Image 1 (cartoon, rainbow, N blue to C red):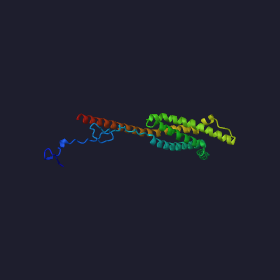
Image 2: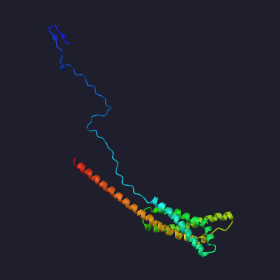
Image 3: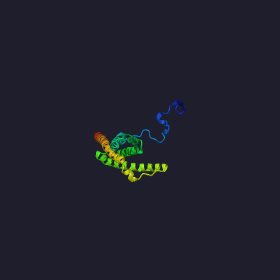
Image 4: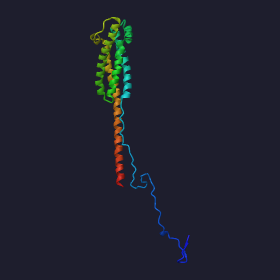
Length: 231
């Protein structure tokens, strides 16, 4: 509203906008974080490329080793049956039935089962030559471990019944243990051939997967360098 001044006899004019002092600007708190900082950058974390995990041969090898144990039991009992028929044709069948029900059959069979699986797990994707050497280990362990377990069982039986305990020499010269060692070697060799064949295929697939992954990394690096060169 205009005012009246007696000196001039006319109303006073309103002050112009330039005569009015500007109001102070109160800064707005933003929590100490600049909201419009052009230098602010977003950090992106990229996972490093991971090479393909090589596949093993232990699973299938264990299955084949279990099947090999069944083959060992069949061949072992078959060879011993033939030996009984040749040595005692009149009582061979009854003697064989007693053998099947005795620890002389089950101990070498159980030892072969455990030893062959352990050797298979250790060799994994090794070649057949390794299984040929491993078959010697299997045969020796089947022979010696069977003698040791049968001696332990003989000691238990002798204590319970008062009979004489079997000696190491008595068991070491038993034909059934020699047969068990020979059959163990043959079975582990030929089952090992199947395990080694499968292991060779697995190794070839692992090498192909690794080569493809490395080629993809080279191509990705080349694409990245070409993209940055155009900036």
